[in-house]
Image (tube, rainbow, N blue to C red; front, side):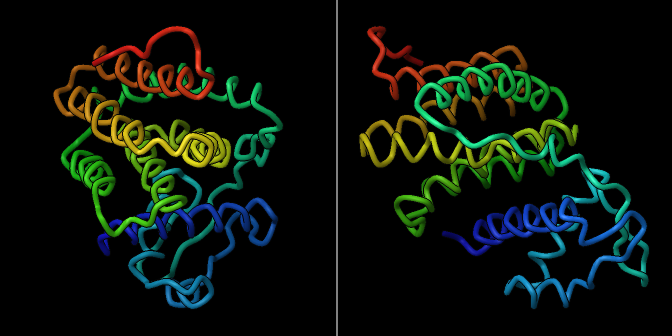
Amino acid sequence: MKPEDRQATLSHYVYEELLKRINGAEFTEGSRLPSEGDLARQFGVSRPVVREALAMLRDDGIIHSRRGAGSFLTRVPDSRVLTFTPIKDLEDIQRCYDFRYVLEGEIAYRAAMRHDAHDKKNMQKAFDAQDDPGVKPGIGELEVDLNFHLAIAKATHNRFFHEAILAINQQMLNSMKVIHYLFNDRTYHRQIKFGYHGAVLRAILDGDADAARLNMQLHIINTRDYLFKTKNDLLKY
């Protein structure tokens, strides 16, 4: 994995851990967060990683920063919004895919309409990371996959879409693990990376919102059908 891609993964980790601490009442509205240096030491990461995680919190309206003073908590997100119940069985996994079909189709649609040059760079980087030989098989691949979906959600410039993906990230990872460990089909993994994800990214970068929505929905429904071995053949791009 490239250093910048690893930094992105670590930044998401720090972001989520800070959200947990905020929702755990460790900080109150208006209170000052630890400095970048202190957070870097607490999490065992570099200051640029912390800086990126704080930027994500600012984008989401959770904190604000004042030059020379630090970062302060603006609001405490409702933990009920940020935490979905764990997946209990295969039926829950199917329901999760149905939810993602609706949610991520709209995310892709809006990302195609609203992305800017910075988003384009981030989405392309997240996509390219999937072909990095340094990515470890297993959980490393799953995290890279999730980062691609998160990059698209960020490109909507609507924090609620990004928070929704973060809220179900464990459910998404769990369903990905089932495919990875139960079927261990490397050909299908590559189809996801470069067939489905590639079609979604091309549509978004082309500004074709309808195609972006359709390709994301096809990606999710085909993955669900593959997992549950439905009678229908997978739709082809």
